[in-house]
Length: 353
Ligand code: CS2
Ligand code: MN
Image (tube, rainbow, N blue to C red; front, side, top):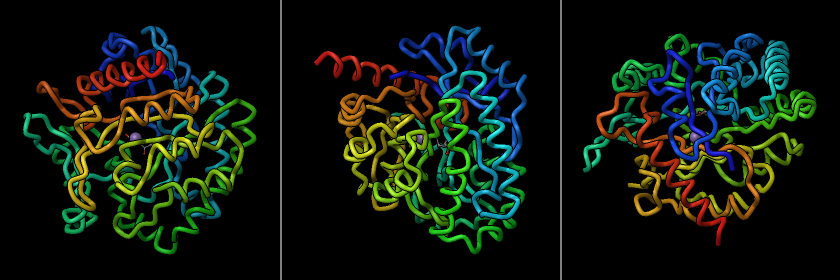
């Protein structure tokens, strides 16, 4: 287990590498070239610079989140082959820099979705929250402004303004893409990149859809055990794996995360461990990490990861905003640092049992 924090890079993140280095037990970061666009080939020099910067601060570059997938690949347009070639070239360059884990998602149009980025909790902290009833009332075209309002000027991952300016066009692109088509397009992509992943020992870790059900009538294919199993079986190479995001999968109370950890043994290449509070069907808050404060058994999750021999990077994923911090929603320093401490403490206790 390699405890990490996500870091968006200098100029994008309010948190510094120096601060991350000072969190006990955090040894690495998961980062990205945040200003690249999906489909673009990442420049060798920039990958090297990013890695050197992380290492100069005494940290390891434990993986990339994300190398985003171009919509033409998700939609399955003829132009996808060129974008897959570009993706393969980026993977090659990452492999050459000794980077071995890449997280990505296959959600159409939007990345993760929330109805509130600053919901006030009784202790005065704020959290990200989701309420299907509220989302149903939002006109998709206003979704970006409603997210931006509470983002404190930070650009949210997957919600880049250039992309959202095209939201109508994006919906149009996906109008004939149903679940099955999206799934087949994912399989096509994975099959094409596997030889490169094997050559450079790169583990691909798809991030589950968040929340784990269709939003705005768009298809979602990484939402629960059966669908994930189907994806892993369709491309059985071990390099085709999963990001076990407990918050995303855990948004649906019917998902048994501990059972999934056992079922996907050897195919979980990255773990995002955080808690959620189920408030009503289709309604949840992101909770502080400890088991007692949310709906998920975080101890049981860590134990299952331990018992199945999980040895990849793990991060506390999102945190609340506490102690008056101003940061990208979900990605402040303080609550994530507390989360990292809690998860490392659980791991030590479990390991010594
Ligand atoms: C998610 C996503 O884990 C997270 O923070 O909210 O933004 C995730 O990073 C992407 O979907 C992965 O591509
Ligand atoms: Mn996650």
